[in-house]
Length: 489
Image 1 (cartoon, helix red, strand yellow):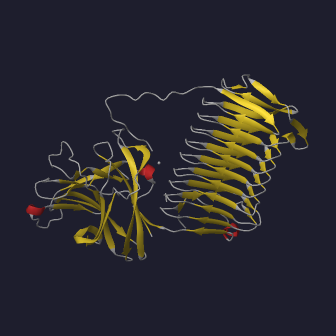
Image 2 (cartoon, one colour):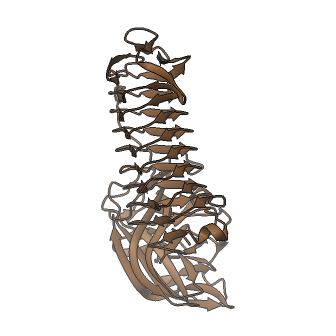
Image 3 (tube, helix red, strand yellow):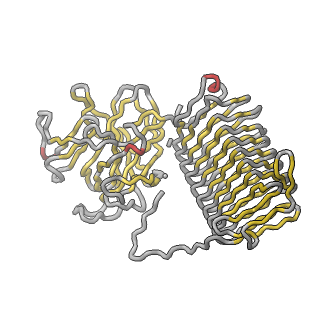
């Protein structure tokens, strides 16, 4: 079962932008009025609430002060059988800035609310107990929420909004309903050995290429649902020692979703449902996006096909392809502001029972334009480190018959003139990623047949390139270098 599968932006200018002003180590205001209220300021605050003997203490860290002091004691805290407790709830607002807030060995008996602000915020809950409803919510920025060895006696709600965020929960007891929600960027959720005992237990991701790791949960009499949002998402994990009284349901939505490295025993598998909207049916190579070593180019001019690359595909069973994904970069370094991609599928001919070349006109053409979900993977291709590797995916609809060989070609046109090519406008330097740099050279007619040099073509098994007259006399051909692309049903 398969469910698919991140963003640097380069700036080119004649000046350097001013650095954003950061206020380091501010002051956190604390007061008690039934509840424990904590307010951060606009600086980067680092502080913690921690049990200290028979009271709770709030410590400022890395220069942050608490009511102008290094630390203060929480007067309303008492010692109970389960530790140092506060009769009210925690009401914390971290405010603007990049803030770190930790809660350790503390207990709160009333509803608790923890809000982040703009900035990259971090909230850690360790060996603590929240007896009433608990809400942890972050806002703009790349934020993280984590719980370790903690207990939540009522509804637990964790939500992140804009930014590349993470939620990690380990060895925690969720006695009431639990809902973990991430926002519209590439986020991660990790659950390790947690107990899900509420009536509603949900992990929800939305836009972006998200990852969910689910390891050996304990699920009570109500279902645990993991539902991936719109994007190319991945869910994985180890369920071999999971204890499931009811069911785990995993589902995908828009985008290319896949399971990756998910293991489970036969007994557990009976209690796990995976709903997959798209299945991986063909991967031209191995190693994932990290296995891409270099690129080869489909040069395309709007008036003529100048130089093209394609790879062969043969499936064991008939499949209707609903999506294609691939990787590549741009030979001029910077990505084009707007892409204009086309995917063509050909049927081909054979030589000595090997795929030889595409033949004739394409049997399917998909002008997907800029609807390719372009994402900067963060990988730089050697030898020019400034050349970023991008991942793409697009919706198509084509049925490939079992046992028949097809050829897939991906190219892009660009509306801007590419300097230094001598080819005028509407010329594109998109380069299709491939998995190995081994290459050979071939010449027209290397198989012995007569070749019409007015329209010369050179092919190799598994990959082909072609050129119009006047482009080259000898043509470099890549062999055993599968272009990086995947087909999904």
